[in-house]
Length: 616
Image (tube, rainbow, N blue to C red; front, side):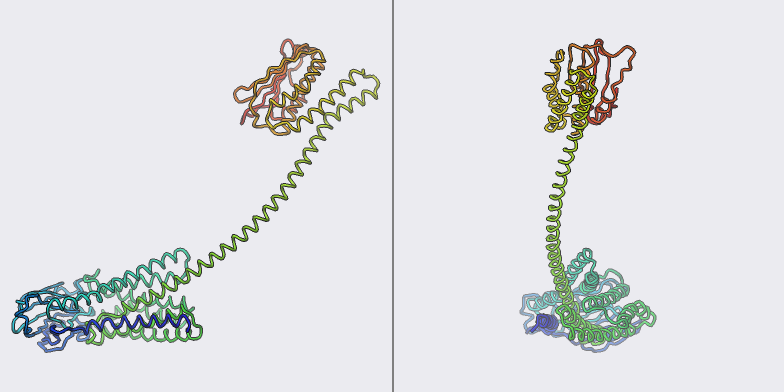
């Protein structure tokens, strides 16, 4: 047998169990308990006197005088139980249903009253069973129990069969009835609210129409079930009755939409007919108020049940042709609600003998909530499994893309390293061309001209060698390390300076790292200082060359000063273009001034954010 067949049997068993509870409690009458089912009725119906008339209980006002309001007094007589005089324990009176407002007297002693007997439309509705304990001494050989009620049209007024007996026997029966009539509906209402909240949260996350209709339907049903246990209604009658009728119509449409979400879109004619019947509820209410009778409501009930009969048959055929557990759950739940609602409509409007029995729909409708919870949970688990599968697939694709990216980055790294090596080679070749190559070309022209002195040619070749050595030193020069740059120049040029007859005075502080430096910038700074020293050697005719370097206010200052002949008289104290070009390329500034005696070249390496011009 398939899974959905077994679930269907379980739901039907639960339905039958719920339906049997009411009859079991109603038929319970232990020994020693009197069952009072005969009464004399005196009533006033729309200002018309009725009776006194002997009747058999229960009295169902809406069946006896449909669409009418009034008051009634029912007199029930019974003889004192044989052992009542010897009993010390209290006695109790149990009335499963009465209302709307009521007073109960035993032998002219008022036992209990609730609501107003004369104010029609009072909010008191008497939904709970009535159990009253009283001392045994109130009983007489012949007892008179009077029950006065106020009856509002359409509000299920009347009086059920009463029980009188020892409190130890009657009150447990009353408590079981209270549990059935009050506690269980409260539990079902809370359950419906929980289902509604759960479905609403899922709809908020996933925007699935099934969750929206399920949440709405269960919320509406929770309100209508809660009404069955409210002793005082939120609104006066008949306004509260109108509200409940509208809520039930909305719930019926929500249940139809739930069936559509599970079984698939229904035919257009069926949808329009169901929508028209449920939307006609306000017109039915107006018709009831206009004619002063409940027959428009009975017609509406008949149309609703006929339409739902058609829907159930159509859904069952669809289930037979394309079975699934979800469709089976919904069909069984709808059938249960249909049967229970049909029985409740008959009990409430046509059959007076069922007056004191509790409504079945408020219990059986739990099947709808249970079916929805099962369907929603199943779909949620399926969605979760699908999300996990998609997440795993996405993780696998991400991992594959990461491997591709790592491979691409590795290839790009190789390309970048190749480009860096190529760029370094180009820089070395450019330095050799601009420095060593230029000096060698000069030496060739000097030798070819035949007019240069050997010393001049030798000096040109020495300059070429110095440029070559400095280019090699620049390969391992740390970026931004000005101390290392100056130390390299001193190491390479001090022998040449001293051989030229100059005394080198070296005054260099420990300099911080030049953060703005680049590889090209360090190379241009190196050649800038080299050119300044070469100019002093070749043109200054000095005896001392001072090199000073210091750090002040974030900037690094390098000064080269000789004691030679200085700048010519009237000459412009501007740095040579070659020095300015080198300084601009390095990101520094250079200035040439008269030291008197001698010439001073000042190179400033700016601090971070300090934009200084290349010339001063």
